[in-house]
Length: 591
Image (tube, rainbow, N blue to C red):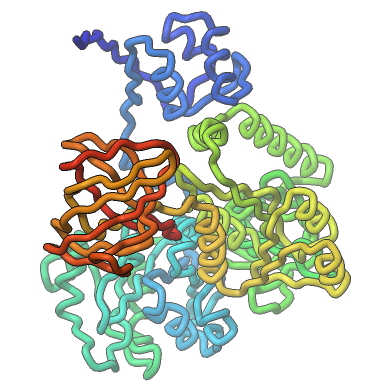
């Protein structure tokens, strides 16, 4: 008999403190903390947990309460607002993100625009970092961002869309819209920016711009000739067809949008990328959004700061100043800024240090006080024999590291998970190897070097180091290692069945019987299930088959035979019982 319990709905936000949740549930906070502790989470009254965690805990408390997430507008477009220009603002160059599916020719198109050859320098011909540079078209400048196309770089692509004024969506005219094209459209719409479609590879056989326009309309991008606002331009990175027209269109959209910024006063903007260079220390690529940046200025980015030692264009040319929409390379940071940090100019080093320290403390507090549902589930599952793969990741740049970590965390299942023991930017160090040795971790390096001393240490301590230059190869390697931790799947295959016509001998560990094969083919050796009606009496092993007086390896349907069975306990087999022969094997599983 089942009893229906009345369920009370309680609305809470995405995050809630333990104390507030206890109050909403009308239970002592000590009881809630105790339930969290039972699940491996040490939380105090003021620590915050997310909605999913709260839902798990409330479900285990069995209070007859259902948590409902407070409804929020899910279509909030822009995550961060761009600097507001004053009445004295002047026109600025547009910032254009080039996005699209992998292999559709984004970087090749940019090569053609700036007459460089970057694609050959990227591992596997795939862009693996966000990169930025300015070009001159006529007497005007355009800033371009090249964003990676591989699925592992979703974080970088979304980041790129939020930096920009215009998105050039590159689609191969012979291939059409693909998953990452759709994702790029979503990012651009979320960021609220204009989209110009470059129908690339128009020189290839099978290029069909009308099919492409139809596909675009299915994703709410209606072309101008079909009554919409989306501009589609045929181009070819190979023949350079349509490139001048594309640049003209970008500047036309810029004029319509009236893009302006203040070029006086303290500069502010965003960190696009960060990495370490031998002899130069932390190096950051940044995009100035307003104001003017100069050599010698103090800038704060997240929890670190710099007195700008060198200010350069992204192609390495030394400059003294940089205005709005200018991508620059900055050296002089005390430590690596985070991918996506906003930067601001402050008066002096004292102020820079104080602002950076305050940000570091705030970040530390958030990390300490926020307990996520994924971490809770991991802790719960750890008690259920979840297998973890310990790894250490070193990458060449912050954006790459973010993408690698995000891709690896997405592989976690109920049975296996990636445990990132440590991660960082720069070459694999002795400390990394010591940590790998003590935690039995695999060290993965993405676009980083291994010194001869580190190589000797790794060989001596038998540390597994794997270096990659292409992200999907690294991800496939981790996936293969995780698959090794999966318990094999036990697969049973039925061979045939026999109806017992007579039992000739029964001992504690063996049975000799005979009968007619009613289905399939019997072979020896094999396993056998002994059934009577619908009941399974037990299992045994077929050690021998006889057709008449002679031993045989197989007997077919309709034939009579004798069987020798080995049992682990005395099993009574009667005339009329059914024997089902089968094999059982462990099959390796993959993620």
